[in-house]
Length: 357
Image (cartoon, rainbow, N blue to C red; front, side, top):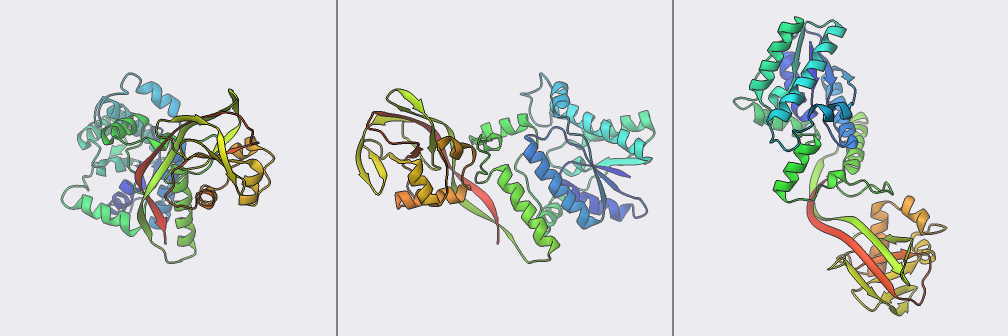
């Protein structure tokens, strides 16, 4: 039997039940989810499914990630609600490709872990599955494992196995609608040109779950806990000196009340230059090198090869002498006696992230 898999949160308990009910079937997991966006989220979910299938002793095949083709299929449906026609097209695509894979592998049955997801319409999935059975002869196995206390058991399995519990369905349009309702920044879509891994980014989660896999392999004791913290994202920023834009690096947690200010340096101490407005501090690349024990040739190199975020945070605390400081701290190639115009569009927000202890 081929089992289409959407994510480990849904598939782990679903696969356990299918194994119990069909003990003589050779189960093959098929991860085909071209709707998942961004690609880093797709990689994270595949990593988690791979981990889950290994624990359950089930072979796993990864399908093609053809996002562009999927986007063409749902064109014009971008603003439809969850469980609407866009989702139906998504079900059609994933089940159709899955049944073709089942035929290719010689399986006479197929099913999908979408059936256990509370966000998915079982009725629509059953209709699509039965239609594909009539077309191909491959039997669609419909099972409702979420009724009764199924959803509760599913949640317990997720916690017991330290699985990644994603906070949105998967597609860009569902994510957009969800974040609008939550009035929350869509930080999943941030990808800094520096490739610095940001707090509670998908990339940071990916590193965390790779660490989980390593600890599991080494049979080391661990626990994934959640921490509430103040998160930060720099949306844009630029610095003018004498009316000309200059290369600049804005340290994390730098904010401006009205996103812009201007002024001149009025005081310098320990190679830290203080602007006469909005608590702005400016240092040159040499001072940054001394504080970080690095050897950057210029700010441009720093922009494209930054420190680890938490190392940068230590530099910030060293300069500000205050762990709660949100004043702008800026790195420039050189400090000159001119007027500085500073634009920083940034946001801080309450967030929750996972940590391994």
